[in-house]
Length: 229
Image (cartoon, rainbow, N blue to C red; front, side, top):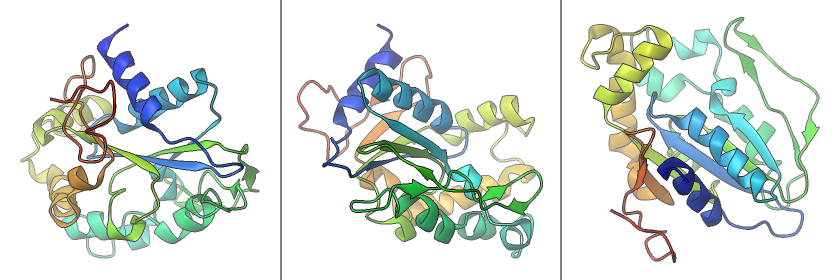
């Protein structure tokens, strides 16, 4: 078994069990380019392989419309940090229905980024006891405090994430480049304000995609069978 598969299997074992019909909410956080989407997809598969039902959602489908996202200026780091996402819709469409005692009637998307359209599809019904695996930046901000039954923070330096984003998006590979200021400084504001590494259930160094490793998270340190650096 590869080191990555071993880590994913161990994280899956840490995800709490469901209580009756209630769903379990798992957040996969990290800066842009840290590998959140792939990690969340693979964790979802590991959980399915273990016999659990999974609902996969991304915060990228809950952007605010462009008029809100750019109201502080298209290059504003504060705007990126404060205005990117529609947390009211994320709560009403996903986090509250999949909370303990929730209806389990959720919507996967609230916004189409390409067309900048607000979406209101018919709700889907999550299976009883399903695990929500939701990836995105800024998931340990105050507005989402208390919603995660389990969370992961992928800790990757900006020089690595900028290289990954350059390959993915064609952006500058230099995190100090002027074109990256909105995104890097906006996320630095988040890291300084919210200290997600201290809030997450598990912190993982995902600098090497082939060999991620556990760092020392306060709330998982004593879990049997988990070796921390």
